[in-house]
Image 1 (cartoon, rainbow, N blue to C red):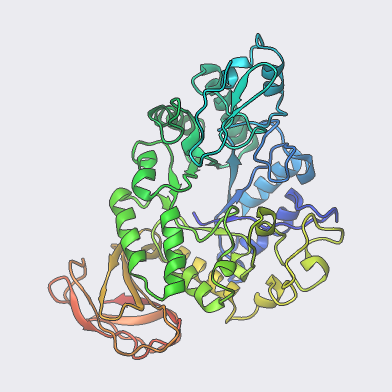
Image 2 (cartoon, helix red, strand yellow):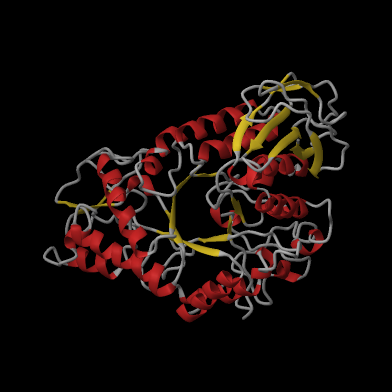
Length: 500
């Protein structure tokens, strides 16, 4: 599945993206017709929290069984799910398990009355235990009835998952969304902070045990549902336990994200291959999610100083990597944005029209000043645009099994600015070749060993890139002195199919 944190419009002109706005733009993501090539071809959408909430971002939930009325009605959302499924698009929603809003009825009752049945749904202490959180923040917050624990903010009190009643309620919530509403899975926010063991507040044994028990429960509810865990700050060796022990289906690969952007900046890709080889060693079934940035990070183009060439090679490395890639909306057209978070979550720039074509009213956040130059309408028919690159690579990935699930084989190269890997499965072999530098490269040689390819001279055909290409001669499971393209143009991307 290729997921996209999704764009929207406001058909009612109220300035807030909504469910009907997403439904109206589904054909931009995937029109459901494999014969057309104008859509992105994605097969999954991840929506940030859609529950009722007093905050614009929705990460403090007041009702797990409802939808934020700013986004529409539950019927509107069900219609979105139905229309997405018609196009082969799965829907994943953000599930905020760790905490609720302090305005949630559960917490309001618990805070008001120490004898409330909801009191033990949260974590309380008569006195301040005194310890800080993982980033030295205050985690114990005073109230008239005692101190309560909230790892993120005072208005986000943590749920108490040592209480079986809380777990039973969460299982009901899972079932409601999977079966009654019909979604396909969850992105689990702040996943590693679920259960604290006193001052140990992340990746505790109790947290792992809870997820191990929840995994078969939600698989029984809907066997083909999936979860992806957000484990910000953890490298893949730590995050892998959540998959290996059957707690989540995927984990976001934060280490790969930063490494790809670093490679795009420096023109050196060795660390990318090293991180991917490590990722594959810890998660041999590729059960991780590559991405470049998300809603909590400065956007790609802002990190790369608005250099579209570097954005292109970052996208190419990500979309030809193993795993299940996630694209943050707007990356495909090169939107910029730096913190505060609201500026990272601006409306998608659909066109050069007023308010970037997002709304006829006052937008909830003013679009970036570059929307007249950077927008979907200006790129969608331009074969050399960043949007066309994303569209081509996503569609290539969908059409070629080796790029989705094939072995990831790093090739040796005498030039550090050349990124060269093979993706290989029983049906095909694909070479990914990228010049990470701003100068042409001709003095490079590729070699590889231990490759499950027959000892033959291979022909080559370009799947992406317009250069003349040639194949290697494989002997004893390897090749040497392979020069597939005479000259690699600056920042050029080549995807080459090798055939016996």
